[in-house]
Image 1 (tube, rainbow, N blue to C red):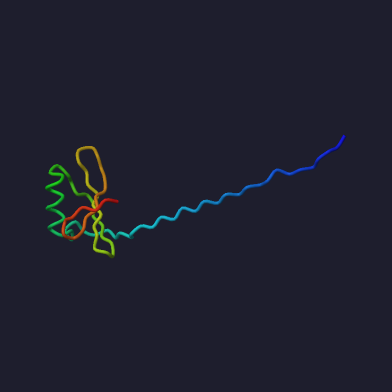
Image 2 (image 1 turned 90 degrees about the vertical axis):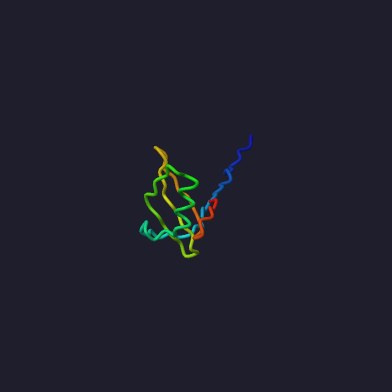
Length: 84
């Protein structure tokens, strides 16, 4: 009879998740450009803007409530929507 001493291979998997996102700074609702407000009213007539943020690229993040749903929309200063 023979005895084998073996060790199971040890596998360490390290997964790093790096979130590359634009840093948005909260701004006053009055600071949101008129074209962005107009685009919001056109796309979501029932929408209520609760918070607004701006990044270094001049892009805006808008927290909007429509009925009981709340979501974030992204737009450029001229009111064009950005998909994120």
